[in-house]
Length: 82
Image (cartoon, rainbow, N blue to C red):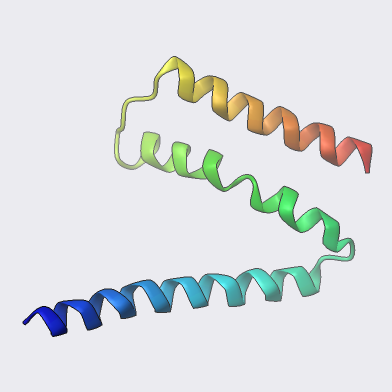
């Protein structure tokens, strides 16, 4: 029973992780300026907060709002500098 749980856990970790990296690298191939890829990927925490807020009705606090704002402002600054 424990071996089965370990195998399933391993597959749950392996499949989504490898699939995400494959999509990430395919996306990088399509971007003309590959240095923008980390900037675009840094929007992930903002998306996670918004999904939690909209879909799962999670509470969002002042610190979360500040964090989202800092990430968005950072992305805007980096994009404008390039």
